[in-house]
Amino acid sequence: MTHTSAFCRAQEALHRDRAAVADLDNVRIIAAAAASAWAREAVIAVRREGKLGREDRLPAAASLSEEAEDAAFSENPDRSLAT
Image (cartoon, rainbow, N blue to C red; front, side, top):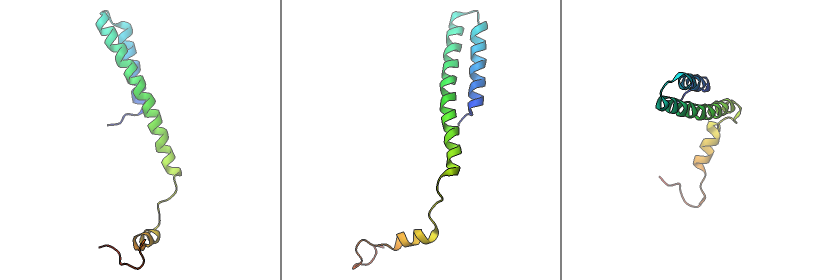
């Protein structure tokens, strides 16, 4: 499952707040580590979201006629196509 960058940043903030108010050292350490992990995940999500936006600008797929020409092409014209 992929998370959005906004969700990751919200989780990071939640864990940073938890670390700030924790009385126990181990709770504070674990919450800080979780916040760091969510920060890294947010960076990955931002990259992924940027790539999703670029898909709209990619060239269109080959037309059916071009695909038919490719299928009919034979490197050995003196021999029939493999079946």
